[in-house]
Length: 194
Length: 125
Image (cartoon, rainbow over all chains, first blue to last red; front, side, top):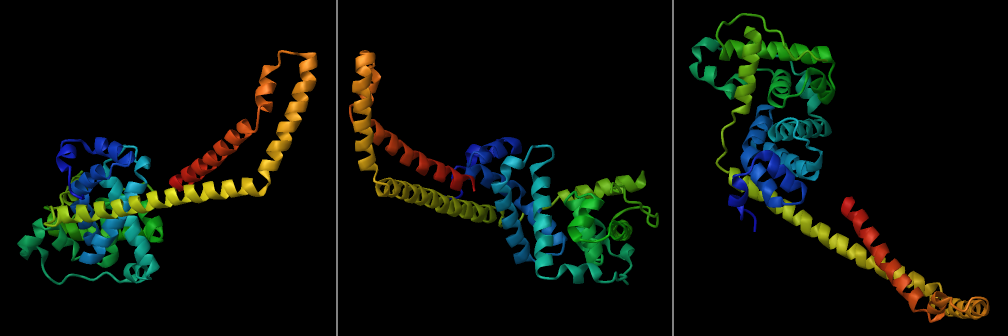
């Protein structure tokens, strides 16, 4: 019965749960989903996926992760690994439905609203991300939410590396204006490993 | 440094995702899908094993294995009797000549092995 036997796994570390899941223990994997499902769904929403679509992709990402659990070496966190799977699945879906091109080609818009007047946006990442152009939001979420490098993001988005760097830079500037102190400083992405 | 600090903060904000109200229901949906996939896979493996075994057995039957076993038995007996004159202690050959049971056992093992290999292959897929 789904949902039974949670207590047995609740005290285990993610790495231990992964080891159990690798032997086919689906309840152990269920505990991992319980722990990190919200983070993965949240990332997909921040990338621009709508509620039901985000949940669909998140489900597929976890199912893919279960099938490939033996590939998870524990170098990074389990959540980070699944987030990267989910981000790539979402981008693949966008590509398949021919939505990715339109999204990344959409011109950046300037938010007319003064960010300093919006107190909530200062502490609300989601609100701040909504002020970004879709391409900027996607690039920032990929690099800072899913942990992809600039070059990995460029490859996943099928965009030139320089374009991705520009999107990230502009996105960071806008986010900093909304979220951070010392507005106005030009930000340089430190993920220029591509 | 300021930029790096801000980027770290941004990463933290991304990581600090609130818990969804339906987090348990979401996990249970995935567990159900995993269970369904597992059941389907077990049925597929079992069915493939049975089909593989039946195909293997029927192939053995179709290749007149009974006739061949009898011929092999006769040949072994002849060989055994011939060798007995030269080496009276060749008991093992008598065992072989003692009937087609050894060959039958080998054939049965081959069928089981075929089913097993097929099952493993599908399981790996």
